[in-house]
Length: 174
Image 1 (cartoon, rainbow, N blue to C red):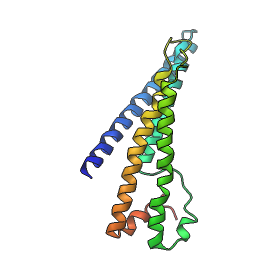
Image 2: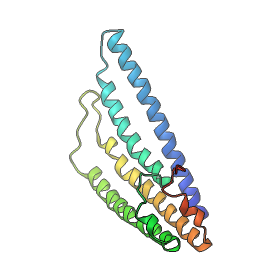
Image 3: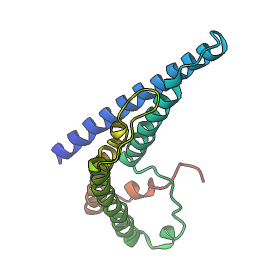
Image 4: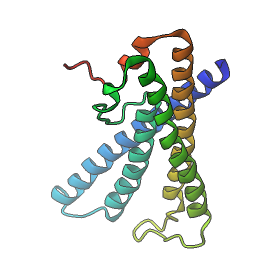
């Protein structure tokens, strides 16, 4: 359990650091692009391309960060109709579906990266396989995060911790 918790903490730190650096990069690149376009009356051909590549990584790793705390959008209307003790088991079992999807996503992401057809970016002469690496990387992170959430649910069921499940799917707004 301690090993899983440490792994999750390290992966979250890595994700947040990469996302923060890339968002800062997007801001700097965008400001440079605007400056070159409107002040120097020139253009940085690579600025849009690099921002788009950074944006892909931000989107995928951002989804992993959201998965860490299981904060994806959900509508618990029907689940809330299930009596409390059974609801906890349903909430835990339902998390196996995204986990299965993520395992398939990881497999397909690895195949996608290993495929022989990768474009070279037009303005930077950059092999776009590096952009595609985010698919298996983020899927791997999300698998670890999903397993952690499922383990936390199982431990909460064993402790009879109803509050753990009441917090799920709620933004604190009634």
